[in-house]
Length: 278
Ligand code: HPA
Image (cartoon, rainbow, N blue to C red; front, top):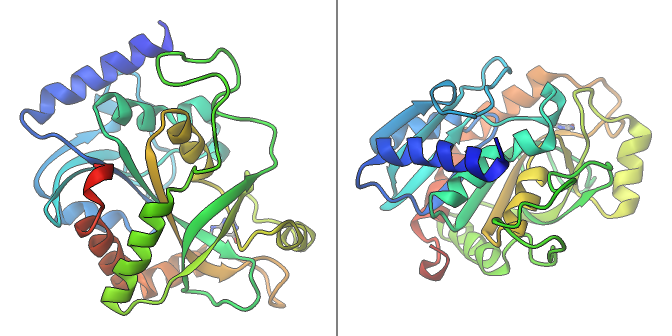
């Protein structure tokens, strides 16, 4: 089956379950934020495995559900659990849900993640709004035949992260008294953490954070001219900055420590999402 037909089938199945719900913001909940989906009101939850053509999540602790309903007065569709390239999915599979949500009429995308901190003036637990990204790996979700029904073959990436959304998110942080950084996220494929030399390279290249997600989704969203906001929870200093090994537990522990403020910020951002981007 052609990609557009598959997407149409997935979107049709989801739309059938949503009834009168009309989601306006797609949210991808990264490590540590999955609980937010539990507080969605009037929720319609669908397991990925029940949606035709959807990939299925393999990471322990990552739920695989699409939860739609109301959060802070906005109708949102949350991915509770995302697909990572390191799991073995193609880039096209990684972005499949984003494309499906676009077909459902959603124009705004809110990406969250956990990332390693490359900027030595910052600290574990800091929250960073993504102003731009660097992807040096060769693959792209748009490699191959262009799905003309979604966007152009060659497309602009200069506003991949919407400036108005960035400004609104900074305002939301100020309202809540939560400190946020603004910085550049660099994609590495993982699943191994980066080497110290790779982290030095990332810093010289202009990155403030490194991570294993988000970039494919932001690229697919740009292709479809969606309005994207990204935010990283910097859970650890990236490899080689501190004189000790990295582990996944540290990532989870910091995520747990800042969960309350991260959640409060995400909620305020949703509450004040600019009307013209909905
Ligand atoms: N590197 C890549 N991805 C990550 C890291 C890291 O240090 N921490 C959390 N996700």
